Length: 160
Image 1 (tube, rainbow, N blue to C red):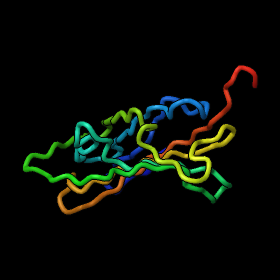
Image 2 (image 1 turned 180 degrees about the horizontal axis):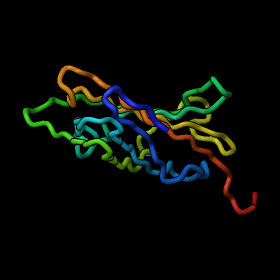
Image 3 (image 1 turned 90 degrees about the vertical axis):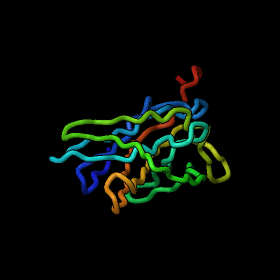
Image 4 (image 1 turned 30 degrees about the vertical axis):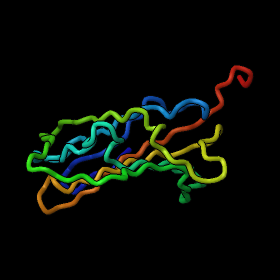
């Protein structure tokens, strides 16, 4: 499930697992960009600009409180600035092409809010990932948003 930008790029999230126990590490996931438009599109390759730091994307987890209500329970925001050099890397997507970005070990990046500071078994959540691109098309800032729903379930052997 994802949003489509005005340039024909659809952004979505594909989680390694969409059902897991709260005691497990948050699963790895992919950010998938698919060109659903009719023109070739350029994306700024800024997902991991600094080798030893986290990805340059925003990650948020919301609990589902009802049809229209969501509550943010965890987030990661990149807290660094990068001085851009002369040579920027880009990803070119022709119509129908996809590009996948693997996001590993997100559980090490996440900051949990509230008194429990963790995900809870028996709850449904939504993962939302945002990538901001200000260089793919000069002078135009785009926000790509991908989402995936997941459930946290108790998988202990004595509860089966």
